[in-house]
Length: 345
Ligand SMILES: [Zn+2]
Ligand SMILES: [Zn+2]
Image (cartoon, rainbow, N blue to C red; front, side, top):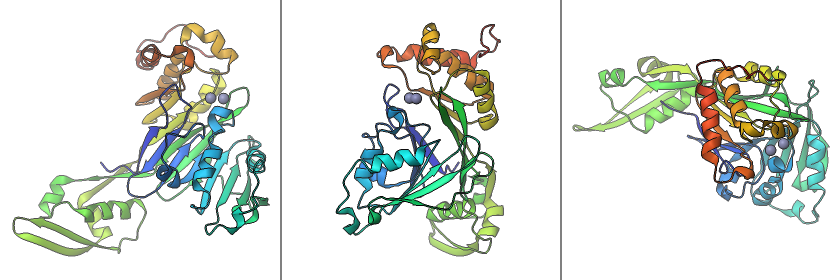
């Protein structure tokens, strides 16, 4: 099966939260949260097209400076999404430095910052190195319902959960996925090759049916080539199935409204990254800190029907005890019987 992208956590489970999503066929990536990103190589950061910030606590936003330092003078643009007050916070970060030479850099960096309002009211501003990162108002961006970003091959939805402050939970949705029908490919008398990757990419990006594909392959009789159209090949050898959905949930309280919001946003996600900060024996402390316990994370995963779960954002107090946190998530997620005390407040 051909995946559009591959997600991975930026740090280990005790490190700052962050999810790096690399595209398989393009030099391109997305990042969810912007805390300590020093483990990402400059070439990984250069690939980022969009960054989605959940909220601006330091462990989710302090990497802004590191990112800026790597891409400044080298990259043309980056889009950043965040919640209430995000534009002002970007502006303040940028105004903390002196920019008397950047306007002369050959490559002008434009930060396209997009603020998602709790009750609608999106705002957008541009910050260009050519203008010493002065804030420039920009027409707002399109947000229909909870879709904060939409492209041909994928979309990102976001909704607010309560972490004492509004915090965005995101779901990344591949719009479709293609499967090669190996038997039909064999019946056609051709074999796989670079052309197949080209065909899959054409189908996923919505290329017109008449787009030509140069089918080239080699077998024991030698090299072969023929030209066929995308529309023709698609029906012959590809099956298009629904794409994979990936949830990114961090920093929230275990409350019924939060769980209900997540259920609506990411019901039946294929893969759920979810904070599991404390052990359930410390749940009073977790509530005071506005975080989930591992068991609560597992219960949420079960309630939303997540098919796979990756816990992260472990408190440093459990250093050396990650197995206990993971076991607690797994037990609650896979439990078949309904436990008595599982209801959130
Ligand atoms: Zn956090
Ligand atoms: Zn936080």
